[in-house]
Image (cartoon, rainbow, N blue to C red; front, side, top):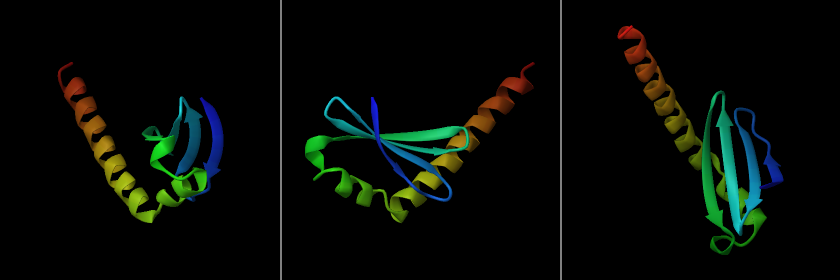
Length: 83
């Protein structure tokens, strides 16, 4: 997997990789990450892919990050309450 772009953002670490005829978009926030795999033939190049990483997508990612943190916290509490 080869890093081909970093997309600057004040909240997230956003990287675009290339692997096996796919773009891999990795969005990180703290200890959590979300990965999107997009076929090369599904977009018209890297520039279009970067345009797709817009504020609406990132807002939805934030909602999922919050849900992921909540899921992890609940699981952590369940384990610690059984000890």
